[in-house]
Image (cartoon, rainbow, N blue to C red):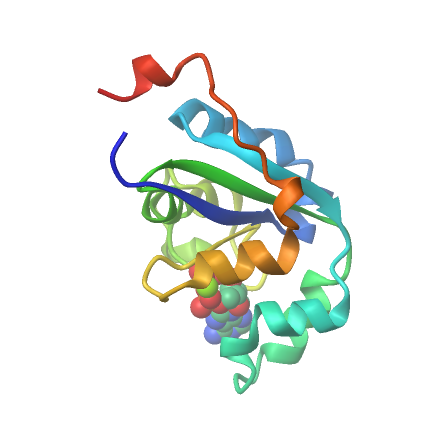
Length: 154
Ligand code: DAT
Ligand code: MG
C-alpha cells in the first residue's frame, strides 16, 4: 500500500438519531478502509469549540457547537490508502443539497445544518492529527492486519 493514512470521521447526533450508524460504517468497510478506533460519546462543549475552532468567527458557530453536543456521536478513525481524501469524496459536499447521489450526504441528508457526518478536511494541514488527538488516546487506536489487505492493495 502506498500513501496509507488515518483520518478522523464522526457520525453526528442527527446520524445517530436517524439510525444511520450501520449504513455509514458499512460504506467505509465496503470501500476497504480499516477501522482503527471508535468511540460512542457525547462531546463536552469545550471539546466541540476546539474541534470547530477554525469556524469560531462564523455566525453559525454557536448553533454548530450546540448541535454537535446535543446528543451522542460515533467518533472513528479509519485507515487506508489516501484515506482522508477518499472519505471526503464519499461524504460529498458540505451542503447535502449540493452533494451528488451516491455520496453519504447526497443520499442521507437534505439540510446544511444536519449533514450527518464529519470528516477531516484533506485541504487543511494537520487537521487529521489534530482531530484524532482531540478524540483519542494513543492506546485507543489499534494497529492490526486485516485478512483482505493482500487482495485490496497491489
Ligand atoms: P465540512 O463539514 O464539510 O468539513 P466545514 O468544515 O466548512 O464543512 O463546516 C463544518 C460544519 O459547519 C458543516 O458540516 C456544517 C456547518 N456549516 C458550515 N457552513 C455553514 C453555513 N454556512 N451555515 C450553517 N452551518 C454551516
Ligand atoms: Mg470541515
